[in-house]
View (tube, rainbow, N blue to C red):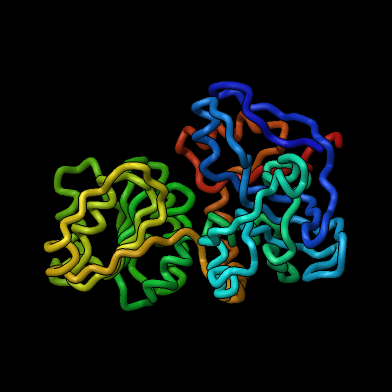
Length: 344
């Protein structure tokens, strides 16, 4: 089978490896749509990466034992892996599992681990059925396209009474706009790239603020009731300045969720931010699996919005162009199609 690799700084490639085989509760999925996420950063750096792709939708083509799925089932592949036995897994928060399984040790290598490939291996408990009539592309948005902000908004109980601030309008942030608008909330978004700002407005944001403006915070406050601040905020950028903007723009007793990964330290004033302001700060990685029916129902109702979010599709052989498109910032969600135009 074909799978994606990186050969050097901004140099993508395709390699051929053995097609994985089902084993125990690990089943083989033929990948029909692989949404692309943060791996482009490793492509830009020419870095090695243990997992090329972590989002997918496709067809179950091989099962080793009776389980939760059957050959021929259409499924969404949830990110990463989990033990399936600990308290977090049993409670639906598998993404926080501390006993995640060693894929290479179980399968004797990494083939089938990533989603940017023609086939992959995944535990059957990590597969979500795709409803009849739903496309692979739309279903795959249940991963990082919609999942992180969906989980954050569930935790913050976002509804039509809220004004929500979203910082960072990459695909995750744009998915956040879709999630918030679907819930009836009023959205104020923040990004400096014009393409993303226009896309957010197209998806239903009430306003988009440029963070480079000296008065960006005041512009946000001026858009809120009595200038007191937003009810809820979510950062999808992973930028320290955006973290502080969310905290400073939130009203007293407001809530702020952090979705974008960040390796830097964000200054937090315990007295002013937490005690006197009464903020609730939340970390959100993915949604709880118990909310999957609600997620899939929503996807089934917002097809037009998802068609706006998904801006580019590439065959696997065009991985170089796909990653270059992501680097440009002039895109929404990009989907890799492993079988499009393929000779295998």
